[in-house]
Amino acid sequence: MKDQKNIELFDYYAGIIFARLIDEFPLPFNEKIADLLRNDIDFSDDTELTRHNNIIYYTVMWLRDNGFIKVDQCTRGVIVSAVLTHKGLEILKQVPQSIDGKSLGDNLKQAVKIGKDELIKTAVNKIFSVSLTSLQKLSENF
Image 1: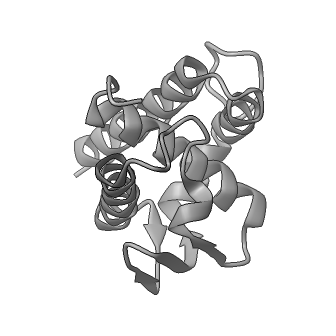
Image 2: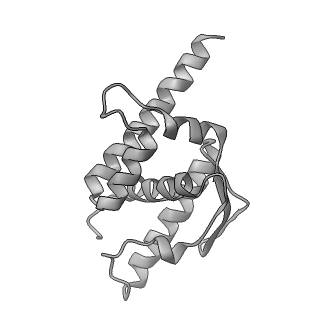
């Protein structure tokens, strides 16, 4: 999948990570990075493997740094004790009126189960959009 842009892979892996975290909540999520890799990459291509490992690592770091998750340790080999923060959980539990009555987390889990990249990307973008809208509303109150 060399033709995919980094942002598309970020959306995909953020979706996979969010889906796992919502399933595991409130228990911590521990996983080898290798177990999160897409099945359709060329595992004999070290450059491609390194690219995907780096994107997963930096996706976890971005989710942590932006307050969606707490993680005790993340290396390019393993994620240890990752859990949704209050912010992450509340966003994934939201049920926007414009969708089918399911929470953002439920829609994301369904997209991951189906395995369609476009559905995962759409679900992740909706999650980040709702997060941004929530932050804007909070800042308006101050």
